[in-house]
Image (tube, rainbow, N blue to C red; front, side, top):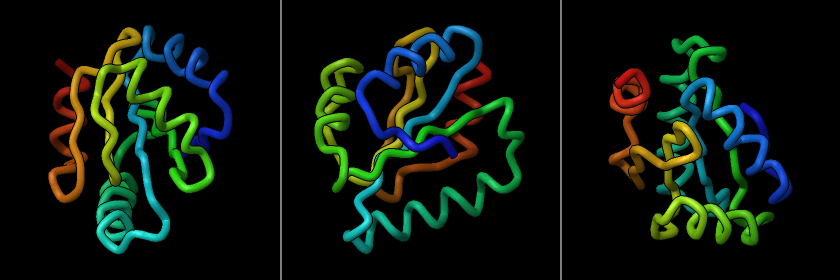
Length: 111
């Protein structure tokens, strides 16, 4: 996973998404629901080709500014935990809490 630590990385992320779909995973490290969703996601991600579906990880507690920019840029309501599938600079799928399903994300990425 690639850590998102500054807003400028979103430009890079949009460029990468023009070549292949990618995921942003927003995580609150103090929330038990977020921890459970993140653990499920990372366990499922062990079986995915990382080159085919890169994941950008955002620690919400340390980077609220990036989270706000993500909500604005991709026209999604902020939630935590939250996954966003980005393709061609656009969010084509998003989910939150226990609705985050890596198999569903991977299928949407191929569409």
